[in-house]
Image (cartoon, rainbow, N blue to C red; front, side, top):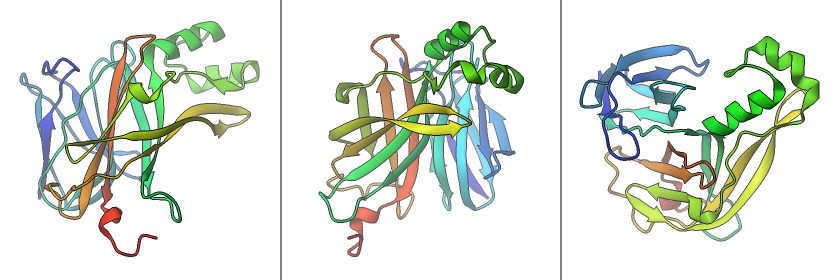
Amino acid sequence: MIKIYGKVTDFEGNPVEEATVVIVSKEFEVLYQTFSDADGKYNLNVNEGNYIALWACKDYAVKNLEYWAWNIPAYQDLEVNPRINGLEVYAVNAWMPQGGLPSMQIYFRPMSLKRSKEFSQRLGIGFPPSADEIRNVSNNFSIIDIAPNLTKGDIEVIIDNQTVKVLEINKVKEAAGGNQSIYGYLIQTALPVNSKTSRNSGYSQIRIIISDRETGEKGEGCLFCKRIWEMNNWM
C-alpha cells in the first residue's frame, strides 16, 4: 500500500480539524476517504497507481470551497498539504508548447464562493443550485460569471518549492454545455531551474495559488506531472 498524507490548513497556517479528504476515480466516485485530526493531519493508504484527483474541504459552500490536487502519482509515499478558503482552483492542466519559448502553459478554472453566491442570488436560485434550478434559468444567462478577476500579481506558481515567473495571463471562455460558457485562465510561466528535488520520482508538483483582491478570498490547487522539460525530445 502507498501512503498519501499531509496537513489541511487555512491560509494563515491554522490546522483544519475534521476536513474531508477524498481520492476519486475517473468517474469522480469516492475511492478513499478520511478526515483530518485536531492537528489538521490526515493519512490515506491506497493501492499503487495513478488517480485523477484528491480533494479536501470543510464547510463547503458555507465558508470554503474545495482544494483539488490532480493526477495523483501513488507510486511511493506522497505528501499533499491542502489549504482551503473561498477560492477553488479547478481543472488544472499543464504542458509545454512546441516550437516556442521554453515555458509552461497552465490552464485552470477558478471559482469564488462569494461571487457564486451573488450569481445565484441574481438568478433567484439557491446555492449550490440544483440541476433543475439551473435548467429552469438557463435561458437567462450566457456566462457563468463566478471567476475572480486575476492579474499576474494575483497568481503564484510554485514548481517543487521553486517559485517561477508568470510571463503571460489570459482570461478565456470555456464551453460549459448548453448555451453557457464559464471563465478559465491560461497562463504562461517560466520553467524551473532545477526541479529534481521532487520526492516522487519523475513527477513534479505544480502549485497554483491565487488571491481575489476584490473579495479577499484565496485558493490553491495543484497538478502532478511528469518533468517533460528534462526530456531531450520535448520539441
